[in-house]
Length: 113
Length: 115
Image 1 (cartoon, rainbow over the protein chains, first blue to last red):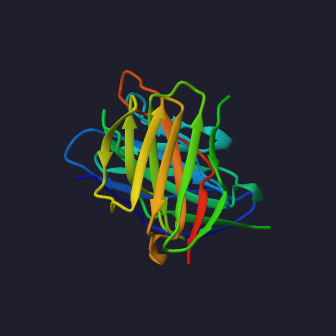
Image 2 (image 1 turned 60 degrees about the horizontal axis):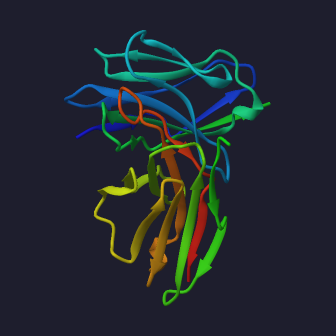
């Protein structure tokens, strides 16, 4: 079975500072990896995904993530955050071809002015 | 149309009530999902429909009954719920692709309170 661990439940950051949200996964088979963002009182929106190929993946809103197979990690980064990035961020994994998406516990990103 | 629309946005029901949640998409997606999300927790998969057939049931209690009348519509019928069923219910859809079902589009959810 697959599992996802988000190492930080909360990350406070000052506006315009860089941020990294950490995600580790475990699986015995090849997986797809995703980052979703959830703004207050809304559903989830896909930020980016890793399916195969280049290990550096660029997503929307200036976010990027790097897949590291040896460390089983898929950390999310942004070089300069904005107040509007305040949200809950979920890392997720699925087995290739499967429909079940397993989410991590989420990281609440808070941007301070 | 690139949205997944869920109605109602809020629902309050008693434990003896029968109600339904509705989800609609017009993106031509052939997989539709129900997720349950408790406060400050990640979404948990409940059901998946692929090509209008139930393909995954994550051992959900029978008081939750899904229905997929056509490729654009997904319902969740609720009966005799418990207060612990109070949660945000999220619908999602996804298109097929060569690598499988890669990307989920989520609705904004129905916030359900069971009294």
